[in-house]
Length: 315
Image (cartoon, rainbow, N blue to C red; front, side, top):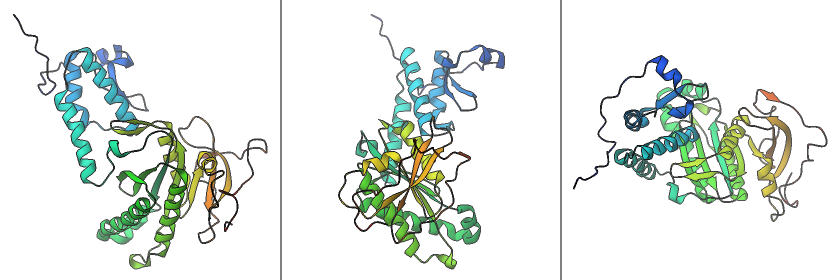
């Protein structure tokens, strides 16, 4: 009796190189990854190319984590179609989770699901800081990260990712996320930095219901949080309407929300209402949000600024 052997993706055979003409004839569904400029990569049109894509996946540069996750899903579907058991590929993905844990990042199993609040930070004018501090920038960045992580942990948040001068965290509720953001700004302002350098951190907050996959969060709420962080200025905390609404009816809180208007953030399908989180001991006045295209909403579309909760100790 013959035994059917399942092919294993670790054994990658020779792959016939697709000519440009042959690539052009293939539909988009024959590629695992298509970037925002329309470039099609990782062909999965036949068994040999699926094997090759599995082997090359970790060497491929993706625009962001949602793009990586979509490509991974399409690739695994193609592997199933050709009855390929992607042992090596899955081992690599599991190894990445072990690496996250070793780096102090929350693993997927530790991350909350459902409606969550994202906090993203970014060091403003980091290029200037690199030039000013030179070889000391690495130690400086570690100091900033310690401040961010301490504030996030103290408020019950979880660190999702950190890249260069950016940090991404998640909270189960909006209030602790705001508390962490305020703590970050206060501690960064109170710290004496090398050469009396001015250090400013922008913070973005957004509440939503992302999709939690085995590689992390994906979906529009993630992109929205990132764009809101980009819109903030150094030293400023900017939140979405969803964050402000999540604070409605909560017991008295020190912060209030200052209406910044409706703004079309790059890559998002609709304009976003932005609000500055205001407290008495942090700067109040900033330029308009850092976006290329914006428009103030008319009276019917805007809501009057209101406190984060019934007033007590707010501005």
